[in-house]
Image 1 (cartoon, rainbow, N blue to C red):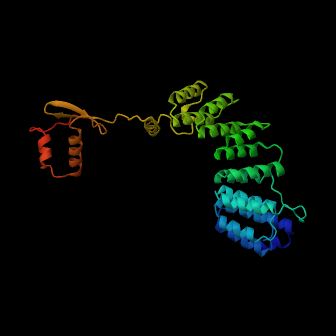
Image 2: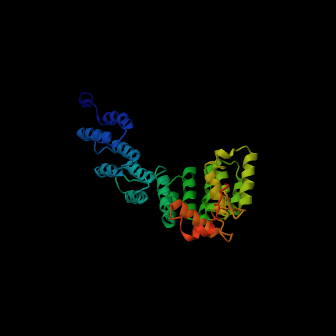
Image 3: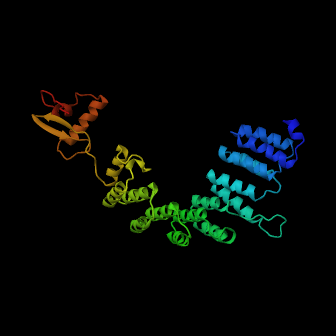
Length: 334
C-alpha cells in the first residue's frame, strides 16, 4: 500500500481511501484507516473526514465522530452537514442544533470561505427540532429555510409539517401544507396524523376523504385514531371502506387486526370485559357458575378465598373451609 500511495497527489490519495471507507464495517476498522490517513497527512481533508464521520454515524459512535471533527482546523459545509446528520440519526438532537448554530456563525460573506446551510442541512435540523418538540426553535429554523433554502422542496416542507404537528401547532402545519406547490402521500399523512394526535377527528376525516390516493399509513391513522378516542362505529366504517377498496387488514402496520392482543386492548379501551373461562361448582346440589371477576353472588368471596387457599396449599382444616364445603365434597364440573 505504501508503495502505491507514494506517487499519488492529494486528490488521488483521497480517492484511494474512498472505497476502503465504503467497505469499513466498524469503528475498529475505522481507527486503523484513520491512522493511515494521519500517516499520509490527510487528517485535514474535509472530504475524507466527512466519509469517516459517515462511518461513525452508521456505527453509532458519535464520540469518535466528534474527535474527527475537532481535529479539522477549517471544517467546511459538507463536514458540518455530516455531523448534523449523524447526531440527528442517533437522536442527539441538541448536539445537532448546536452544530447548526456554529455553522450559522460561519456564514459571514466577508469570510474567505463562508458556509451557508443548504438543502442537505435543513431536513436534519428540522427533524432535530421535531425530536426536541421545540416550537420556537422550529419557527426560527423555518425562517432560516425561507432565507437560505430552496424556494420549494417537498422533502423539507414535509419535515416542517411533521415538526409543527409534533409541536401541536396545526396552524403552522396548515400554512406549510396549503402553500405547497406539490404534495405527496407523506404530506397528507402528516397533516392527518397531526389532527388525529390532538383528537380533531372531524378535520382529520375531511382531509382523509380529500386525499387523491391513500396509503396503508392513511388507513391506519384513521382507524387507530377513532379507536383511541372511542369512536368505534367510525373505526368500523373506515375499516369496511378499506376492505371495499381491496386493502387487506393484515397489511396494516398495527399488527394483526384480529389478533388476541389487539382485541383485548380494544375491549379494555371500551370499558368492557371479556368473559373469561367460567367454572361450574356444585354446592348443596345447586350448580353455580362463577368467573374470576364476578363478585355478584353472595358466596363469591368465600369461593375466591377457597381458591386462594387451595392454590397456596394453606391449612384446609380451617373452620371456614369445613363450613362452606358440603359433607360429600364439592364437584367441579368445568
